[in-house]
Length: 99
Image (cartoon, rainbow, N blue to C red; front, top):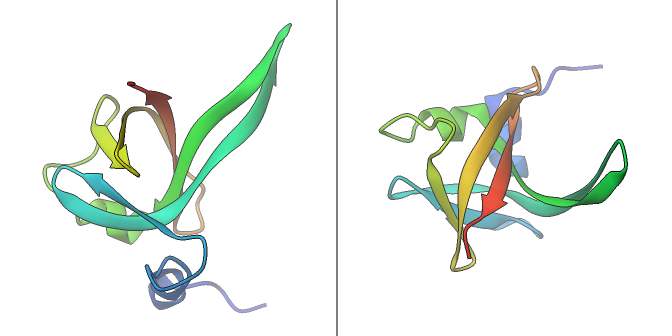
């Protein structure tokens, strides 16, 4: 199976594709996919906002993105709690709603 490269990820996360949301991070537009993912820990379960984007798009943002950085999606502000690269060129940003 061929590997997914940066060009493939740019096409997958293109703002012209269905389901793609453009986030604003440090004044830069970053295309990706926004979801509320289900989680379950001990006796607690619920959903957590998550933004998935390419590592390449995220690395182009200056200053560099880190935990605590503000991200705006659909006029809602979030704080990045955790940055989780998956080793395939994609990164999940685990978010906390600030509204």
